Image (cartoon, rainbow, N blue to C red; front, side, top):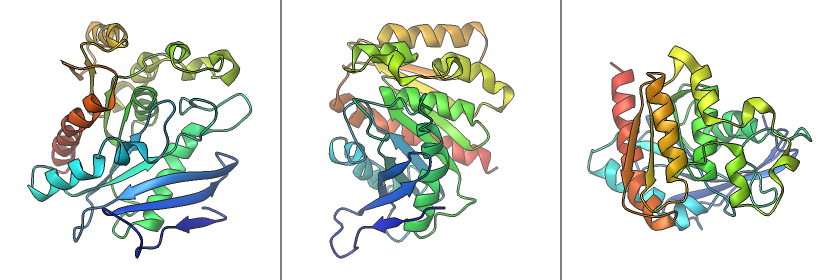
Amino acid sequence: MFRTIDISDPRFEMDGLRHVAVKSTALRGRGDITLWAPTGQVPTALVVLLHGVYGSHWGWALRGGAHRTAARLCAAGQIPPVALAMPSDGLRGDGTGYARHADGTDYERWIVEDVPAAARLALPGVLDTTPLCIAGLSMGGFGALRIGARHARRFRAISGHSSITDAVQMSAFIEEDTASLGFAPSDTSVLDAIVGAGAALPPLRFDCGLDDPLIDANRALHAALNDRRIPHTYEEFPGAHEWAYWEAHLEDTLRFFGGALASSSR
């Protein structure tokens, strides 16, 4: 799968976090992933968490404490034991959008194929058959909602926090001209991806803070899904476009994934 893979030495890993660098044909270079799995438990699912603009693979863990939230919920038996895969987005400019670019670099394939494959190599107990869930924040929410819907049969559940819902909204956050990224028209809209999934769409949720600049876009997506009678959960909470909000509400995502995994195993 990879010409090279470099995995952190367990002697120096902290807080259960493992770091991996792989040479990816999708990225046409190396990509980084932070991984976590509950101690002494075999993961029953792999949760892929996508960061937002300006960030990288360490963001969900070292700014949002994602592994500590997962550890607490797993230890309390409130969710099944899940592993986390927290990849970089490919690190082009301020953000890649997790989509294929005009130059052929395929940031979507990196997430769908390479990240789970690297997790299988680096985390004991993560197998080809381990169910996948995907979530993200802001640009990562755009990636998670769109990729999860486009690859609906690969993911058991999808969640987004404070999500960009159309690629054009990235222009409010990044220095680069969004047109220069060269997204295909089919890769720009979360709504189009969800509609395109049809009956294969897995359980879907998303939320947004009341003081978030993306609140109107998220409300519009919610309304459009309701108009089309597409099942989903949408929630609003106090908060803004910031890590305090995402740290608090990752718990909602993990609980949602736990419920979806339990339902699909019956």
